[in-house]
Image 1 (cartoon, rainbow, N blue to C red):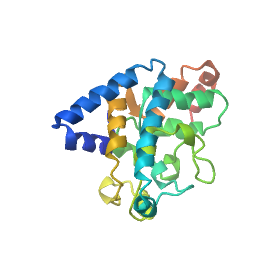
Image 2: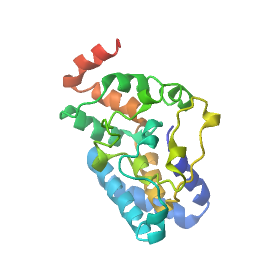
Image 3: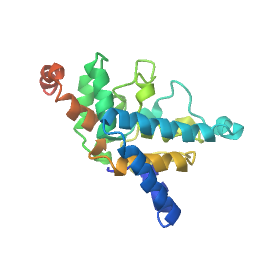
Image 4: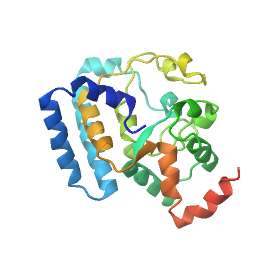
Length: 220
């Protein structure tokens, strides 16, 4: 999954527009100025948040968006990340943030296959960065995909408990074209992309403090 589906749809909508292609090049040049991966991720987050803030200045948008603090149904789906984002999240674990290692290895075993991922039981699919109350423990550094997805439909439709992808409920998302364009630039110019558990596990395996734990949990 090199580029998230919603972001890819935005690109497909505007790719024939010369001004859009020029904008992508300008964004890529700005991103390239940040050579340190974690700073590059935070730069993109800042730009995405700025674009979203403009949209949420419209009272109608704020009223219609159903996402609330503690709502974590979408945190049980497969999330695309860049290696820069994975390194940022892995650093938090390295610095002491506890995670469920069993979940990490089970989720990572699905690779980039969404069909394989949704065969994992719903509770085991919960993001490794959720706390017991369903709140994100890395909210300030959450992935760009988590920032751009805002639902207008009933939040219950975000639950994806059925392992059959054809039975997944259809949600109505807020169109976030400007933020999606920054996200597209990020993914298109990242050296490695993949799923959150896949890349976070890969980065963590390089940290000496996690190797012993990783070897132990691999046998779970």
